Amino acid sequence: MIQALKSDPKCQDIQFEVLNFSHRPDLKFLRDEIVQQLPILPHDPSRKLVLLIRGLEKSIGVDLQGDYPPVLQDLNFVRDAYKRSVPHPLLFILPDYALTRLTKFAPDFWAWRSGVFLFQTPQTTKDYALVQTLEADRPIDSSKSPESSERIALLESLLMDYRPSAGHPPTDIDLNTCNILLHQLGVAYLSQRNATKAQNYLENALELAQQRQDVSLAAEIYQDLGRTFAHRRSWEQARLYFQQALEIFIEYGDRFYQAMTLHNLGIVAGEEREWEQARLYFQQALEIFIEYGAAGGTQSARFSQASTLHCLGMVAQELREWEQARSYYQQAIEIKIEYGDRYEQASTLHCLGMVAEGVGELSQAKSYYLQALQIWAEFNDSYMVQTYSLPRLVALYQQTQDEEIVVGIASVLGIGVEEVRGLV
Image (cartoon, rainbow, N blue to C red):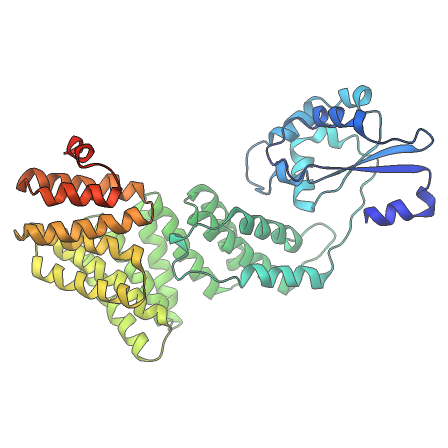
């Protein structure tokens, strides 16, 4: 578009200069930046200078629910200063989601506009971007892998393209796509542990799914709203959403999602210390995962058994059923090893250590705890190391005075033995 402007015969008396701020996502004072660059711009006095402002969407942001962007706050506040310090026409090139934020957060500056030129994104371009964004490889449990800000930005941008707007009646396909995007944005923000934004998008997605009578999608959204409230430790609200999801999955015969929801209900019951209820939910989930996998279901059914077995182990451990807990944990870790999920092995190894310690097998407990520490250290998970691993090992050392514990910690963390002694 810029090249077309420069080569247009009608614009021969105009000098277009591009100022690109895409490398400045932290930009706050646009006028100051322009004033600094004006003296070094080549300028033909015989031609009218027009400044093309690009890349400002990086500092404006894509989050439509977010706070007041500093760059727009300043733009609105110093509007009148542009007359004196930047006496040239400004042409802002922005995607529509950034334009929406500009009109919302810099209304005084926006009131100065002399023209708005809309360029419709070709449907083929939108469709390609949609496929590339929605069909990206996803992990089995997306909550373990936070979504990148780049993918969230793409989802936000696509949502602006497909969201109904005045003068453009939405098609059924557009509404369906909009619904999917709202849902995926909720899940993406949940993966980043941003429960507030996740709830906002998921509630909007649920409202649209109910309007469209898309019961299947509504069930998935109920499930994710349950996860959102579980993240906030609002257990009763989480339970309510999981139960609503379960009712639909049962009605539609979706066995795999029934198992996932039963597993989540088990977690809620466990957090409420309803151990027998938790055990019942986990056992029901495990039976379905086994049945689903045996019937040729996805590999995730087999992998999901590991998580449910681990949870059954935790319930048995809480009830001091040591041998039952050990059996569940050992089954869980066999599956995690089978699938090469080294990180998840750490939590089960740590729990096996707690069981061994509970029955007085202190040497075995030491071995399990050190193996868990090794894995968490490999993945630079300082939270698990500091919160769970080291306290257990320190307590075990104080109980046994086993020097191998000190040496093992020093070896794994790459520090001196004497430094470890300072910890114990």
